[in-house]
Length: 304
Image (cartoon, rainbow, N blue to C red):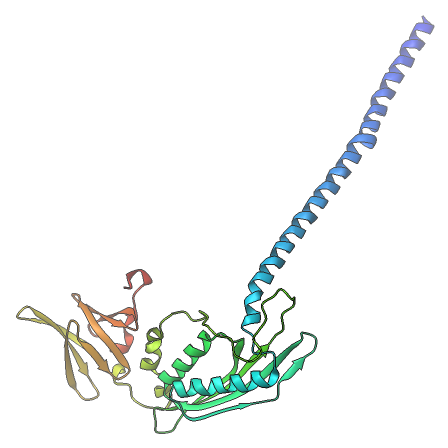
């Protein structure tokens, strides 16, 4: 009986040992190594994915940067400086500035990046509309350039402005022989869309409002001209605008052009207590009792 109990005890001990030993062996020799292997596979997959994304980004960047080479100033410093300076002078003449002047400093070679940097001082006198035209043409031009500083000073007792700009431009060499190279003896040609609108007429509102006029202490009649009434006589609808600086009344029918002070607009429609003007390609709503310069732009979905 004792031998049988001993055998049973030994078997139980062996079974318990086998259970825990098997569990330990499973955990130590299979589960943990497998988990570690899975983690290494996961880390490797993540690194591969990250590397793939980085490579794709680099390829996109190289493709996106390729046009910069053909927008570079000529690689010959003397040609680049003289050609670009002449282009700036032509732009001032195109915009009909007076007192035109373009000066340039010696080009600076940036050894680390292997490119030349150019700096130009541009001055001219003209109207706000001419300044807007200059900026519009400048930002449509192809060269790699930017306006570093800009000063606009009103000319005393005049609607003219003295404009002073510091312009920076660069010439960069291609990084690889397969990259497109900038020209040697001419400026880059073509146009770039870097403005909000493709049409210069859209910026006419800038010159119409001319906030610098107020800085000079002048009176804008549009601030004192109010929509006082809407009249319908013999089937014809017209609006009455009262200029309180002169106590005069301006009458306009649908389709008429209204030009009072800085306000320039065409009367498109007349509602019960409001009217709609077209200004600079946008629709502007004016209520009876409000002055012209308090008209507000209608949401884009209502624009023509």
